[in-house]
Length: 334
Image: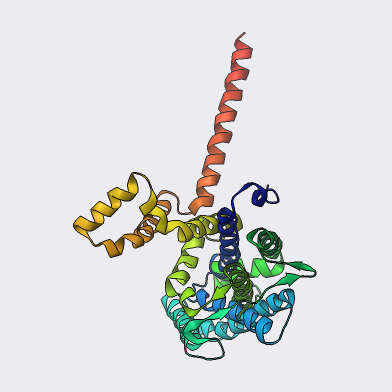
């Protein structure tokens, strides 16, 4: 299905799929840090920016081929994640969230005021190739982005069942108990930051490849909030939940300005905004819908979208079991 989708959908929808795939990679990284290890981050837009600018600068100024530049984007982001993880060892809860928030804001400010990174004007992404094949259209970029997303998802899944993944979950449940059982808490907490930052850096490089231009205005604080909301909406600690939440939030982030174009709802919202609010605030209505979606999901099912999926499967199984029991009892009566 993934192979055939770009051949069946129009070009804009292929761009949408690429955007959602990039969000899935970030969601996987957030799941490693927040869902598996229990460390909150509000600065992942900074790692996304580091990965994007690292790849573009290597390609534009050092003529590094795209595959190697993308790998270096992941390594550089992992280095910054490791450095951020060191002071974060003494922080937890809201204090850790504020520290990561400061990191994300600092990264965007440094980029915006540095000539090396193009300042507020940003940078144009050079033409990329994979071997002899140019990545010139959304379809060719789709196979690269979705292919990398699939490989990274398998890697995160395999990591979750290793000693490292078990150590992450032990730290999330109880640092004291994990240390008592011989888990090096400091090492694994910084490692989770590095792994999460590496995945986000790769996503940043792919985002730059997809849109063809990067500027500091792309990597905002609200984007970091959306990254955290992805794993909460999908289900903390669940890889399928991270994928589901990333797909939904990625689509909403890209399409939230399209509410005005809906046949009936669009004019109604515009009239409501003109009467009670302001027309300027109408484009932000998508954020209202996003927030309400997260609140209702958590109220209905704290495990997120993945919990709703599990509940639906359990209901289906119970229904089938009841039907089978009725069939057996009916045949016995006959």
